[in-house]
Image (cartoon, rainbow, N blue to C red; front, side, top):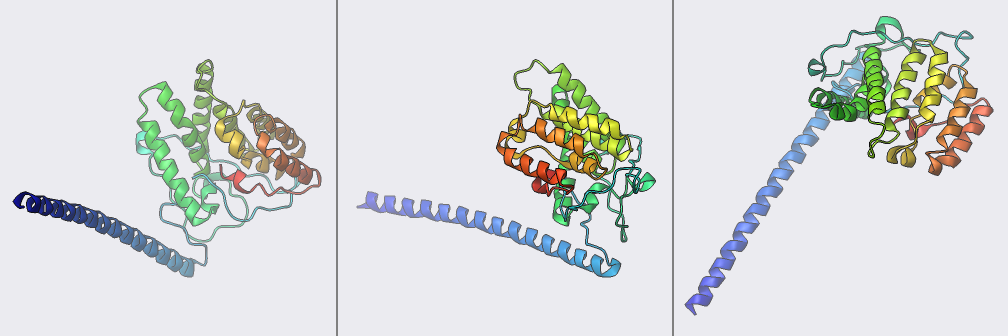
Length: 300
């Protein structure tokens, strides 16, 4: 009798302990969610206040990665020389990677609707044209990429970090560093050519970055060549599933380079077979003189 009672008391005590632990975890999780909600509400209030004062779209204090949003123009712009000159990137002296883990902040006040050029390019970078949520994602991704690159202890570590760093540098307006990282990435890719884990990511994305820098600097022949080199990628799981980023294709279409973009679409069919229908649709639109809606393929 005594033994049975002791067992019941022990089981009751054990159940009570488990309940207390579960309650503590729930309370802690609730506190975190409440804190995060408060932070988001505060950020939204700050953004709304900024919009009232400046009359421009709200921007987060530290916006962020790699993705574009907003309406895409569906009319092709005239080729360079027939209209406004294409934007040029600022050549910024690269700083140390250890001190470059914070992306530049946005410019206050309203921005002109056209492309920026000259010394303004580093400040009015492409990322500030993204929606606020995408700015924040891009900023976080860029910071992580720079931290990963700064902590690289081998060429293999650098190889894995250079891609995101190069793309981040470009959208944050630091074109010279983007060029340096993309060039190094291609060099290491050649060095690792015989490795079984290597895929076509570097071939595509590094040439994409170099082509966008060339297009900014009005070196259109080089930009077109980089686009075609990107299309020669052997593919990767990401490219094969979601497809290639079409930012450089869009940049060249805006400058009237339809023929090169059509060649690039054909090259992409080799590694993006699931996107064959999209590529056909985009090709027809380009031939009709329209800008395709690339949608999420400007974000990858």
